[in-house]
Length: 85
Image 1: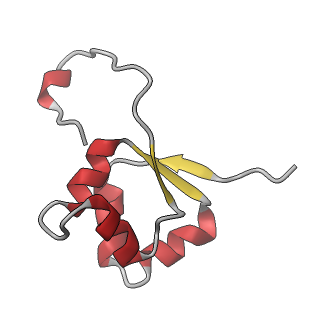
Image 2: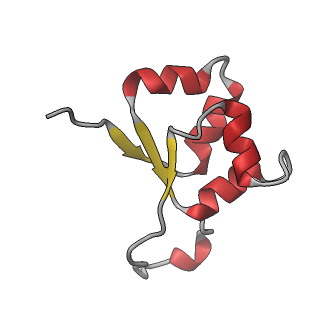
């Protein structure tokens, strides 16, 4: 059985991959898929691209990034200080 190497990410590390030369190509050497909530993909595309799909196509990562909605939202102390991404 061939297992996929999968990680979950927020916006910051993915922005770092954008600015590194071949950053997304590098991360492909380590991981098969990056799971993000919709808010993260929105933040990545915001201000640079017309929509999220354009962002994914621009970086050639339509097969790398997988958008999943959170199955539950826990309320943690001071969680009101965090934004969705």
